[in-house]
Length: 207
Ligand SMILES: Nc1ncnc2c1ncn2[C@@H]1O[C@H](COP(=O)(O)OP(=O)(O)OP(=O)(O)O)[C@@H](O)[C@H]1O
Ligand SMILES: Nc1nc2c(ncn2[C@@H]2O[C@H](COP(=O)(O)O)[C@@H](O)[C@H]2O)c(=O)[nH]1
Image (cartoon, rainbow, N blue to C red; front, side, top):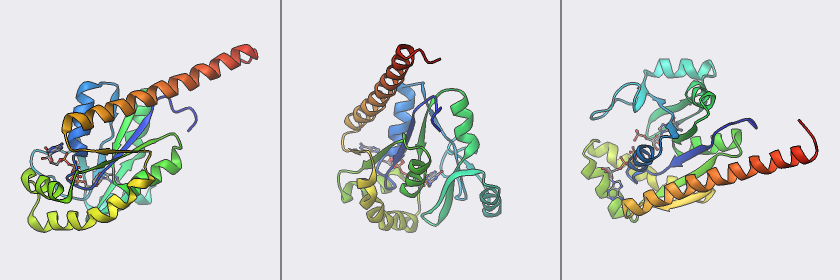
């Protein structure tokens, strides 16, 4: 884990707070940040494509992957299973990219235990009314699914204090600016640590 060549960012939020929109906008601006495509047992919605937003798999397929230890982390979220495959991360690590995971808080906490340097970012909506209206206006989920997601949001938001950063996504551009600033600051910190280590190694004549 110490040799991780890029940075690992983990973004979590209650459903509808805007994390996918923010992560997508970040990746359009910053080609060095790469996504990890999760596996899920939920059905595709709207324009979602297998292998792009998610790998959509059956429950037995998912459980088989759990059995074979194929997941770095996985969790039950809103009545479905979601997981980050080791392959999704390792391929990107091998490419030396910064990786961003869009996962729920349970997964974020599992990842932090594995990668102590992972940067955990929680996105909050500005209000309950706005969260509800974003879920309805998105027009992707049936009313009972929206209700379930709103019910789960309170418990999810209570976990925000466990994260390194909290961004309030009221004005989209402001929230995007905050996300970019966190990514930038982490890169500077990482570079500074590597440089400091290189300087010490040189001073001590360690190869
Ligand atoms: N700052 C914002 N102001 C207004 N609408 C927003 C803002 N950010 C995102 N939205 C809209 O809110 C809706 C929910 O956003 P998004 O799908 O990104 O949420 P999410 O957190 O990824 O949800 P889920 O976990 O369910 O996938 C989308 O229709 C998106 O366009
Ligand atoms: N623990 C994990 N959670 C994940 C993963 N991929 C997505 N998610 C989270 O699930 C909910 C619902 O997502 P949706 O696409 O159905 O709206 C959301 O909080 C996602 O962040 C994963 O691999 N592991």
